[in-house]
Length: 306
Image 1 (tube, rainbow, N blue to C red):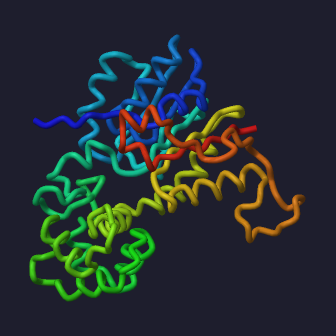
Image 2 (spheres, rainbow, N blue to C red):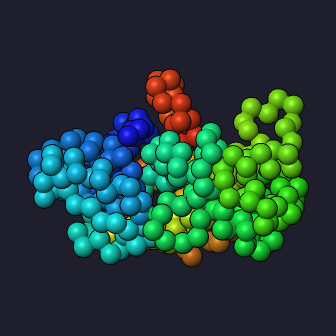
Image 3 (tube, rainbow, N blue to C red):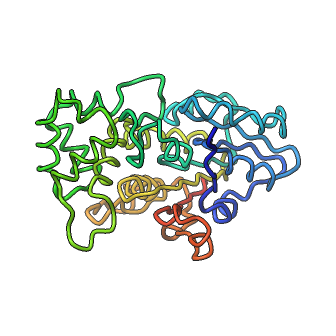
């Protein structure tokens, strides 16, 4: 069985932000391959404990090594991170959210996240529930498709792509990754100098829509902050501007700052319940990029509860 190589992104910077301690209690909201979870427990040493959650059923077998190495100091719950308030070990000294699709999901062609090889256009992070991408494309309203392609995928040629998807309904062209990618390429075309495949942005947008990724994040952030002890740290790693904007606005709000440039509320109307630990988003070092090119779009923000 193919096992993708898992390299946790911004690992050093994440550990610096969380500063795990020997008697600490931590939560990893996106277990994935367990790289961050393992590093937190090893860094902390002592009798530190960590709970991890993941909505992907494929993550469960990867927890066995953690259970073997850390025993009762590690616990796992099959949950999306928007339900982190169901984890009974709260409150926590530190919480990590590493948002987005994992290497395991990307590198398993059968999951349908990539168009490198033909597979069912699935793209679900939780394969046990919800409709997959093929069904979404066949049934979603024009407005929902526009939201996925234009707003989430940030595809400039969104109208042509959306019209092509609607025209292809019932033909089978939306059911597999390779056929879908070819359809989008024909509709969008390839602009001179464009380095990525013309279907890349649409695949991203459809994936975000199918998994309600931005909705999950918006619901999870206040729950994560509430689950922290006083002095606890919330660290969030995002991979594109839509996610990072949500995180930045939420962090600004709890740190008593203007949410964005349009926020003109006077200071006495703001509530400061957190301290910003990252003045701006932390990006991967050149050294990390040379080892793990997939980390190039990652950015880390962290706050401490006061």
